[in-house]
Image 1 (tube, rainbow, N blue to C red):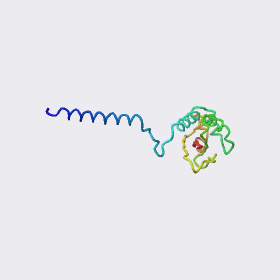
Image 2: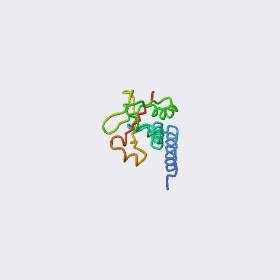
Image 3: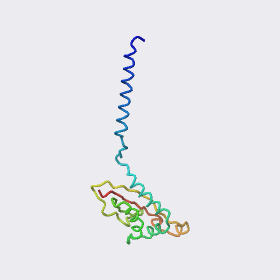
Image 4: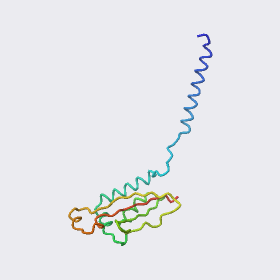
Length: 150
């Protein structure tokens, strides 16, 4: 090797460039941006807790199944505590069967991103389900809408 000084300077320059790029990557991390249509983590977790409570709690399922255009107060008692944890969120819900809407979702904003989660709620007892002759009353579709107030 005839020109050792030139080779050392090239290696030194490459190391300097790597160090500078490393510093830039550490100083300005690229966070994961939310892509269009993706549900925010907080809303996704809140929806999951509410839907899990509805699917596992017999009283809430019966409340939804017995709702025939009446007051959805028992469903509100389930949702409010979960949404109250984050005062930045609001909610609405809709309960439908195969032919009609029993409880319509009200006050959904048109200027905000609204995230929906749907679950089918059915009769919890097979004997009761077989005794019901009207197939529309065997199951209902519960749709939960959540959005940020900001």
